[in-house]
Amino acid sequence: MPHSALAPFSRLTSAPADLTLDLCGDEHAGKGRVWRLIFDGVAGEMALLALILDGRTPLAEVVEGNVVVAAGRLGTEYGGIAVASFEDILARVSTLIVAALAGAASPALPLLPPGARPSQTLFRLSSARLPTLAAEQVARKVARKLYHLCYNAPHWRIGWRRLEGAGDLIDLRRHPDEGWHDLPDDGRRFYADPFPIVREGRVTLFVEDYEHRLGKGVISAVAFGPDGPIGRPEPVLEQPGHLSYPFVFEREGQYWMVPESYTAGTVDLYRATAFPGGWVKEATLLSGIAASDATLVEHGGCWWLFATVREGGGAFSDALHLWSAPDFRGPWTPHPRNPVLIDIASARPAGRMVQRDGILLRPVQDCRGGYGAALGIARVLRLDAEAFEQTVETILTPGPQWQGRRLHTLNSAGGLEFIDGSALSPRWVKGAAA
Image (spheres, one colour):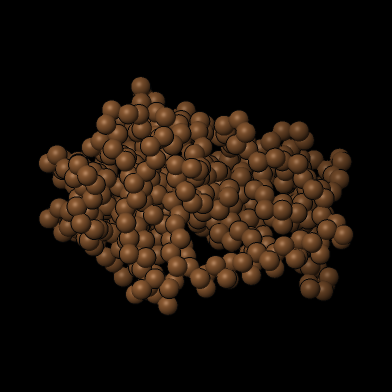
């Protein structure tokens, strides 16, 4: 762009600004109020790019002097792809700055368990380091391509176990010694987002049922007996677009569901007329929004809806929005401080919220290592019309009792507990998608 193109804007510098936003780390002595944007304490896009190339989670802060005005842990949908990650993160930086200007942003992020925060030591991006980083990027792309040629990806799996008086994960804060049973699939589809509910003394499990050949999820259900699933999940709700995260609950003697339908740009409420099927849409709770994993809870005399929202680009998992309503049918009012949290480590819901000893606990996704990489348990410290605060007390990752690379949903009902995570599904499985 020629400098002449900026001429119409030159008048903006003729008078002192009320507030200067410094994106580069320049000196602004004597120029009034200045907000600086820093990434892990360092200003400038090269600092951000260095973090991305090193596979790190950028901590973005807007600071005035030595005071933090707004902070966020920023995420991406394209881990390992530098340019796309850079664009995702810049989109969320815009969200953070706008929230700070509106006075809605929080200067503090949820505390994480000791040892859970990645090292914040920033390496300096130099010309000598660039060839190595470029080679690592190419190697990751090649590995990803080979993986997708050999396996259906992503491929999730559901684990279940009987509690039988034992503590659940919220009590244990670790995987059970006995491990988990797998809900089997045929390799052509995966099951994810387990939501159990009890009806007439029997547990029914609702899941996302994703067939690789079709590239779209539907909601399926399967009954559970003393020895596990009775049959396999069968479809109970399908729409033209993708469905997942079947948040199911009982109220007023009826069964309701709020599935994720972000591809339709809505959050919809369904009612079962022939449980576990016969779902009819009762209301659209939110519209014109790309909301992920809508989760409802009654608290403080009203209903709250939690969801991460992708607006103006950026990741699906790092910007938490809240709405409140007098009834689960609505009308829903957005929280005045939306997004109430920008944090790839603890924003996105991961299952039903639960009350323990008067404390509201919230399963969350820790996506610092990629979507659904780990499961956090957060204690809600404040939830009202003025503010939201939480602290993350536990982070659970895959391990000997839960093999794989991911762990991202937690729910229980009727003495059964369910989680989900990643699995391998070779593309040469008989009948699998080519």
